[in-house]
Length: 185
Image 1 (cartoon, helix red, strand yellow):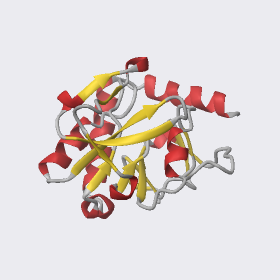
Image 2 (image 1 turned 30 degrees about the horizontal axis):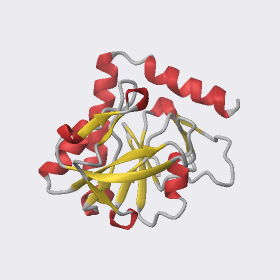
Image 3 (image 1 turned 60 degrees about the vertical axis):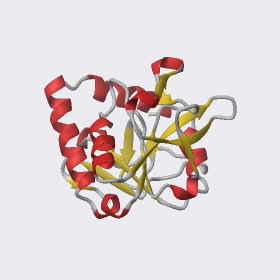
């Protein structure tokens, strides 16, 4: 399968989950992440604001705030396809942008330098056992991660993990992958 077909497969996996199944997996993924050493050691967490057919990130953001951690969320710059992260202290600092995405309002949030982010939770639709992923196709995260020095982790259900995915020289694998059963690596 090519990346377009794989992307469609990943979207289908997420769309096929019942509300209860999705909620149960989300809880397990959050628990696995929050109990991990990579999360406990991080002060600033880079994390997206999830959409309907993605794993809900709000509980992770809220728990990070409770623990005194900084949540940094990305804003897309569609021209050069770059990500810029901003500190999010309240969900009221978000604005709705293209495709209904929720992103930080730069007028209400403090920018965070890449070097200040200790751990980034990288989104995706499918992942392989080497850390490569199929995302939504914009290349935003690969560009951002190309010179990122912190740690990366992805959250995925077992159904989203495959043995191998096609990848290009510019694709950046994640350091760790967590499923509802725990760390894959």
